[in-house]
Length: 391
Image (cartoon, rainbow, N blue to C red; front, side):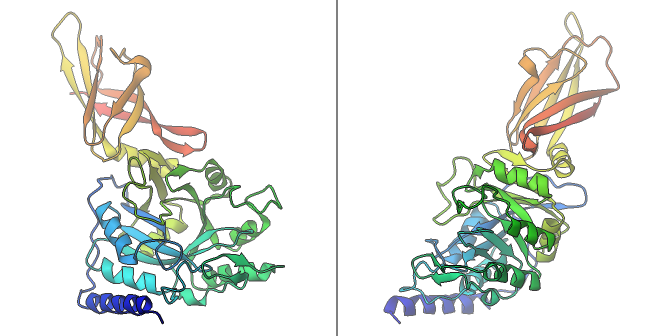
């Protein structure tokens, strides 16, 4: 063992020992990013696709926890490739080490760390992440020929070798989602990216989700897969280097609508497709979650203006969240200086418009609202109605 290997192992041991001094307290929510809850559930911010030096990443596991705390996340998973070792001459390969280091570091933070891996053959079913595992070492990767500083698969790989890690995930009660479906990973044998193996994994209840955002990029193929096969919407950073400076607005994340901040509740949310994806100030979700999320993010007030030649009504929309909204609003009245009904409501700010004239004030004002930066399907944005009492 090289001196560097010995040093890294000693550092790991010291982190583990230090971690035992910290009590197992209930995790509080990370409040750095303010987001609304939806009825019956709290909103948790998660990144389920991260790498460290224990596969092909370039940061230490505890650094991922520090980043997550800084960036307002509640949940992360270090999903190391089970079939690739990036630094075999420097680090003794241990598929549980990264999780254990991160878990101990997380005891001092609001971050919950979930045990996960990435299963990454270059043939169908391609790259997939598995979460909520109990023993990573039990996942086989017999389709590989060489995993040390290179990625070489065996010739004449058998289907059972490709299925084996997924069947082990099923045995452990894990949740699988399809990573970044794309022709960049295509083996050129079949134009269909959702292959027969994917369909088999879906029918067995093993495959449950798909990334519609990876590394800050929206994936229309993934979104259409989610809609066609009723898969959970997932969005992640897939970070290999440090997060800071990697994204122009904020890191991508999965919003998880859970009963409470526990691993069991998060798993229940993923199994029941209670998620949205937040990236580059855009949201991707389904209407049952997206509509109450938006409705709870904003509040509307009105002010009667009776001075002047005709009565007016000032309408103010306050955004109580850290996500800006681009809206198109229409009512039964004329909105002055508001072409096409467009209005931007920045995060934690109020935007107003004036209806003129309003000859008779209604008891309630109905504002038909299109939220241009919330996708509820690949071809449709959220349409809802804001209703406010007029006093």
